[in-house]
Length: 96
Image (cartoon, rainbow, N blue to C red; front, side, top):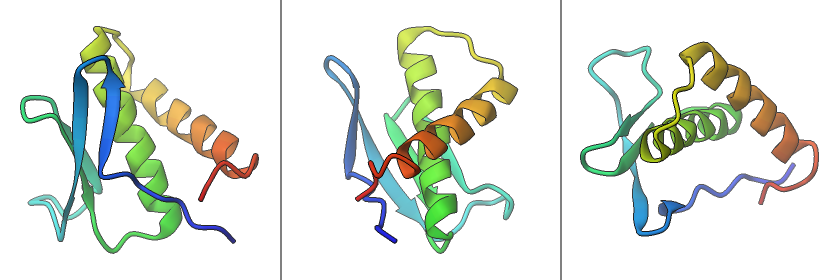
């Protein structure tokens, strides 16, 4: 199986770039990632499975797009899009 490559930076729109930051843990042990709009960072927890990392990256990227483009997306829909985008990328060999 090929590996997903998480970039160091992600361009969300013209002149808006989010840095990808890796952390060992969050205060809440159930949190796998977060999007920090004020510092333009997508923060991912290390030690997840490859599938979890990619899904978390997609999820937090969707939050960044939602915020930066002023789109209101219910959190339940973010989860649905996370699954749909992951499936789309994985099953069409767009990973690695």
